[in-house]
Length: 239
Image (cartoon, rainbow, N blue to C red; front, side, top):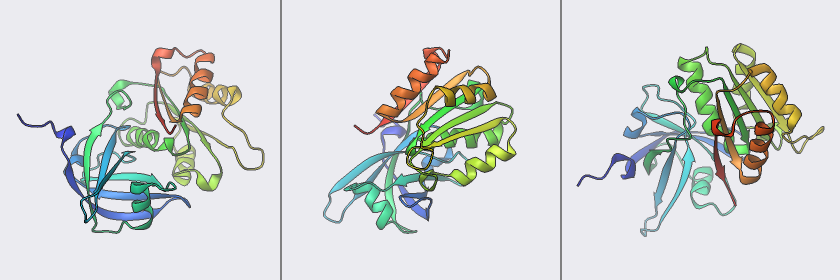
C-alpha cells in the first residue's frame, strides 16, 4: 500500500536565507511539495546528523504557490532549539533537509472560503496569517481583511514593512499593531478588537495564532465583540 504523500519525507534544498528580525530568518526551500498547498498550512522539517541522529519541528509556511516550486519558512531561533538553531546559525544555500506535508486543513484559507477575514497574531503566530494575506492579495483582493498583531517591539514584528505597505496600498486591508515592551506598551484588548472590526465589518472567517495565553485572550475578546465561536479557528504553540 502506497504511503500518502503527506506522510512521506521529501528532499528539500535551501535556496535563500535572509534575516528578518534579530531572531527570525526567512528560509526558502525548493521541494516538489511546494507545487500545491493552502495558505495557513504547515510542514514538518527533519534534519539528520552524520551519526544518524534526527530532529524535527513543524513550521508554518509563509509563502503561497507562485510557480517557483519553493516554500518560504520564517524561523525564530529558540534557546536550545535543535532545528531552529540550525536554521539560525548553520543553514546555507545548497544545504538539504527533508520536508513532510503540507499539513493542516481546518487552519487554512483560500478565496472560496469567503470572508471578511479577521486575523489575530501574537509574535511568530503571524506567519500563517501572512500567508493568508499574501494569497488574498494574489487572487482575492476584493475580500476585506484586518490583522490584529501583537509583538514585543516593532523591531521584533515579523514582516512589518510588508504589512505596513499593504495597509497603505490595499484599500480592503487594515493593520492593527500593538507592542508590549515599548513606550505606551499595550496588549490586545477590547478597544483594539473594536477598532479592527469597525474597519472590517462583521467577519465571516476568523483565524487566531500565537501562544496559548494569546489565543485564549484574543478568542475571548473576539467572542465578546459579538463574533460567533463557530467562525473562529485557532492554532497554538508553546507550553
